[in-house]
Length: 114
Length: 113
Image (cartoon, each protein chain N blue to C red):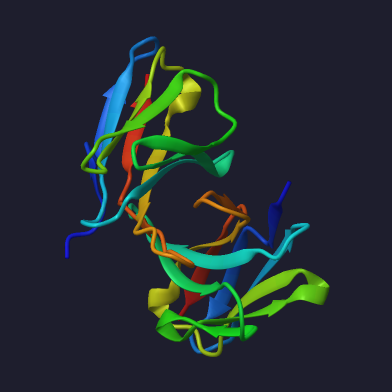
């Protein structure tokens, strides 16, 4: 069974640009969550999508947005990039059966903003 | 709001020695607790989890953790460190519905031969 895949793995952008990152969850998984990882702030929750609806949202500005498609694939978008947006962006998926659902993480997309 | 504190951002152990990584959490309701490991240039891998039931939890690669409600702790241990244990370890808590995880700051483990 294929794991969570994220594309692209590496990305370089300049300030003011926008970027779209993609996450394909494990087959059958319906929940997708996004996290930002930086040396200064650590791992921070961005948002979670379930059945194409945002279920949870972290404390990030409106420049950060996401969506989920009917096949559970998810994208996140960052507009008007700032230097501080340089980070590893991790996506995680879970199946959403009754009870506890383990989250599986992808390898991440490393975004560098110049 | 919940929070997670990991004591020590770096830990150095000798190969074969005990690994002990500390995690304390704050939560007003019973949490789900997790330990993840991250190797360089990789995502997070789940080591073990506490949801309900037995407070001593065994995970992969010989790691285990004990949930102590009275101390609000979930420390991770491994009796004998191996070189392959060199990585960064994250403690995380999940409260309520959904899959939002709150992570501690991480502890980087160095294993000396």
